[in-house]
Image 1 (tube, one colour):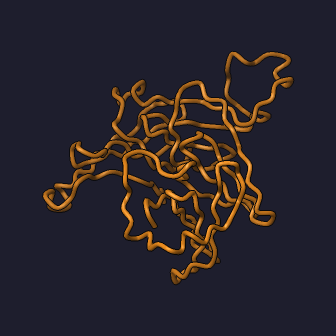
Image 2: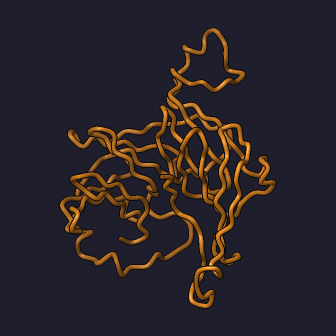
Image 3: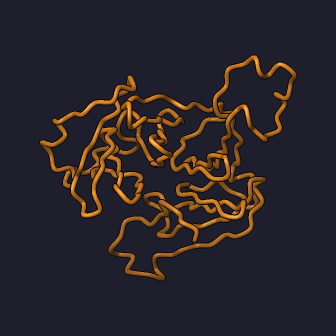
Length: 243
């Protein structure tokens, strides 16, 4: 559970990530570990039993920034496939649970990004980038984005997922947040948490915007309204669930 990111739950399993070891862990609903596997940087899928020598609950993160080779963040399961967002490569790593083979799903970015959370809704993938961006991706063959690449022979080029970028500092928010994580989508609105990085004010924000970057809501959640500020180091939003 060292530096754990992401969780997926269905009727059979709880799936989590041991991020610092690029390892996916399957537990039952009582918390007993059923299985695990590690994705190496050559995309091979292995079971490294050396991991079991340590109690990862008591090993703290040793440095700032990403951990692991991939820094897996978010987990989704579609049929027999696990889709993992990888911050260090700005891509999906997809694992076929029947064949235990992994492959990449790549995106054509127009700007540097550090994708973190990513959800699939209405045929599109929605990501947060921790440097204050929202990335929306679609299959190249089905993309609705209008770009200058609308030429007659675009089909001659190899592309996987194509993207659209919303820069939060260019929206009515009017600034670049110091952190950006957690996203959910409902009724074509994006719900995103911002701010709360170490050594900043003990609060974070929840904003609501559409795919054109129009800001509809901007809320501030302050720790002083909840608890004793002397007993906590930082406050931020990590995930959003809209019911």
